[in-house]
Structure formats: C-alpha cells, structure tokens
Image (tube, rainbow, N blue to C red; front, side, top):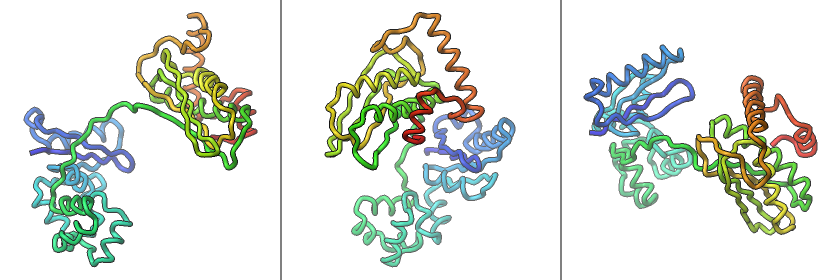
Length: 303
C-alpha cells in the first residue's frame, strides 16, 4: 500500500511526502506525521495539519479534516467513500466552481449523486468524467513528484500599442533584466542561456538566444539581450521579454559575449551584488536603483 502524508502548515505552505517503503524505519506513517507536527512547532513556531492517506487525494482530504493543527487518517478507499459520500462534489480533486455548476445542471450536487450517475458523467465529460468517477470511488493514480529546480525563468511586457522605438524597448529590457536577476539571485541560481522573446505587431513571434558561461547579474543579462535586439528585424513590436534557462546552482565565469573583468574586479562586483541583495531582502527590491533604472521607470513605470 502506498502511504502519503500531506502536511498543511497553516496558512500557506503545503506539500506531499511519499513514505512508501520507509515506514518500518520510522515506526509507521502515523509516527512520521506526528513528528512533522512536533518539529514544525519546535523549529518555526507554527502549527500544521497532517493527513495520512493511501493516495494523494486521500492525504489532502485528511489534512483538511481537523484543521487547524489537526491530524487525521484515511487509509482505504472505503474510508474515503464513507467520509465524502454526502459532501458537495467540489470535495473531489479537480472539480472547481465551473464543473460543479455543470454537474448541478444535470442534478448532481453530492458525491452520492456521482455514484448513482456514473455513466451519465462519463458520457458528458469524457475522460475528465471518468477521472471524476474514479476519484469519487477512491481511485487516485497520481504519484508524488519530487521537487526539482525550475528549467527556466522569464518575464515579458506587452504594449498597448506597437512600438518601433528601440531605445524605449531597451529601457523595458533593463527593468526586466533587473527583476529576473533579483529572482534568480534570490533562488541562488545562475543561468547559462539568455533568450530574447519578441512578438511583432503582426503577431509573428521570434526568439534569439545566447549561451555562454553562467551569470546572475542584471547587466550581463541586459547587455546580452540588447545585443540580440540590435540584430533583429526593425518592425513594430507588441511584446518583448527575457527568459533565462540552463539554470544551475554553480557559478562559473562571466558571459563571454562581452569583455570580462579581471579577477579583482569580479570579486568586487560579487561583494557589491551580495551587499545589494541583502539590502533588497531587508528593505525591498527597489531600495537602490541606478540612474538608468530611474530613467527607465520614469518613462515606462514599474514592470
């Protein structure tokens, strides 16, 4: 049997933990769940609700059953069915307000109604209907997927009117680069590939990329995308953006598209960037701005 733990740390943070195969090491899922509650309270001073279940849906429902600071177990499909049979259909994973309204139009408002009209639901909603029926029966085939680092991060800006002003576009890119640099530095990541994204007024989309050594510095990002911008067709533009990919946690040399600084200058820039990041974390991202940023924001506004 797969045992899932869903920990809901009130009010924002939540996540699944699949302890299948490791229960014997820690005296069972129940012991693990109580230990999560104890350590959460001890280490961060917060209460949390923990649900033990045989599937992702059952664990999620269990975690919500005794909130706040609760503990509940749903160990079999029969336990789940008995618990939810007379509840609103929205208790089923994936059934939102719109689907609930669609079901209500055909007289289905509770989980019991789902049991009694399974084929009708499948006929109307096809594969999604089959999923609704299976979940109501306690059949949940989803697996817990471990967290992994994001593959890319990006930001873009859409203009109300097409623009041919490439100086204006570079101001937009400067503000986007500053924001993305802050985001990846906050995540302690570096990017190897920088991509310029453009949508022309005729809705044609293009991307231009440069890959080199890793960086997380705003000016490296900005200089790379503006160099790419200078090479594209000069047509009216509706949208412009930047994405950073080939992310890693390991720093390397600076991007090689431009002249690099010597080691002493690099170390000084690293110290300056670290100091700036500390100030931003304490007082907000906009606490210190360059003259170019202030000029760009005055012209464009914040992005």
